[in-house]
Length: 370
Figure 1 (cartoon, rainbow, N blue to C red):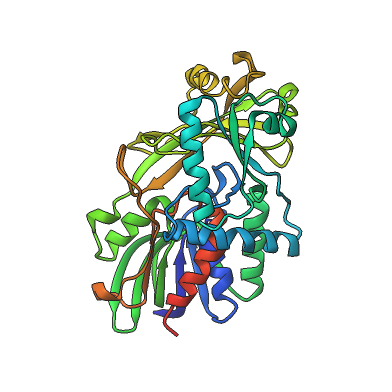
Figure 2: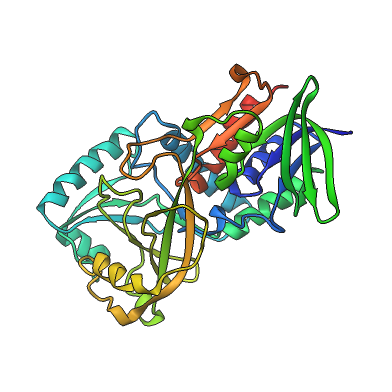
């Protein structure tokens, strides 16, 4: 049986970041990816936002990796000519109750160490974004957008340039713990084969709970819930009417941050995502949702008409918390305590996973047995 040093399952943005980080000090690393290219699931179906770290508990993985990862991502993009823009983000309140929630969020962001946040009055907001209608706002100038495909492409090039290998079109069908590591059974178009890896890193995104169970850790706390988010595109004639990301005040009972407006690298405007728990992975966008998207955003984006929006795309978030449940953090864990030394689990890596990817990679590198 062929032996390698490190196997990583999942060539999404986090798996690629881990591979890139480990290739600086390790060799004989393989990524296993069931699709025929990188980033075919959550990594390519999101808002492509570089987040600030305002929303989550201060000492959580989500906050720490987001804040560190944001800086690392901006540096990586600048050094490698990855298209990105630090365009800034507005979180807007449209009534007195939302202003109270906005003020709480502002204090929370400052407590998380986001010293560049600004609290804006209605007049100050109008000076920044004349076409946005709100009573108050938080302005995060360090929030931005990135070309996620270009970012992942560069990560894969750098990894393969360090003699790393990506096995596309390979599905993991079995894991067996041995004295030497992990015997991994894979299936591709040619049939099934096995190899032995000293370290195994589970970065399988939407399938990460299933991979963990395959290794013998069928833990109810690891069970993922699929939360679908649809997006609608705004007509080009309206896309230039805002220049920054515009988010509503997040609702406590919702799984996401609320339907927001994002400007992409082509300066086109998109609304979404919404949040809907689903049982299966399906990327169809229901055009009948158009009115709900319109109603959700017209209060702070009054220039948008129903006829301006059309279905765009959908993504699935791999959430650990179910509908109506409280906060759950990323799971980034070496499973030695469960008699699986060398097995590193990453489960529930949803937003802000893109922003946090390079920071998560550093944590994982620190968990890899020398």
